[in-house]
Length: 136
Image 1 (tube, rainbow, N blue to C red):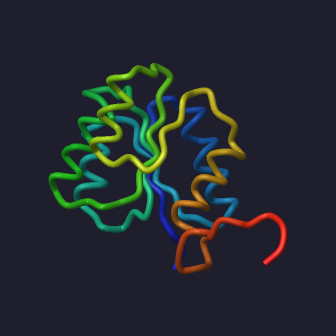
Image 2: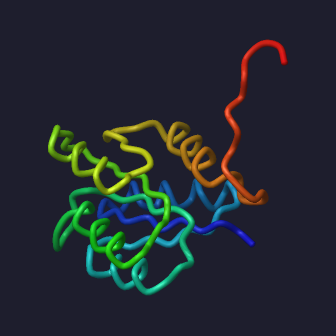
């Protein structure tokens, strides 16, 4: 069964780019653009292995959505993206147990590597193990 990623991003080009890259790599991808739509998808389903979440959304913030998800028992891995980095956002992201915090713009290869580290490749059962350089 393919691992599924929920992309919560209101910038259409970025959302389509992420979705296409994930699907090409073998993941399932669902794209939503606003907080209310994301709540319906994420809080109404246990189907997501990972949520890629923009912090600035219509109808609120990604961190508000994440707090609601955590209160409702959603334990999905989360990558939080923001173009508006601040100490307060980083602190709140840490409190809400964001798995990875990325500042926009970011490299697509980096986010795909992060996805694989957090939930593994589409065909295996878990996250990638860190590769050790050198000998045994």
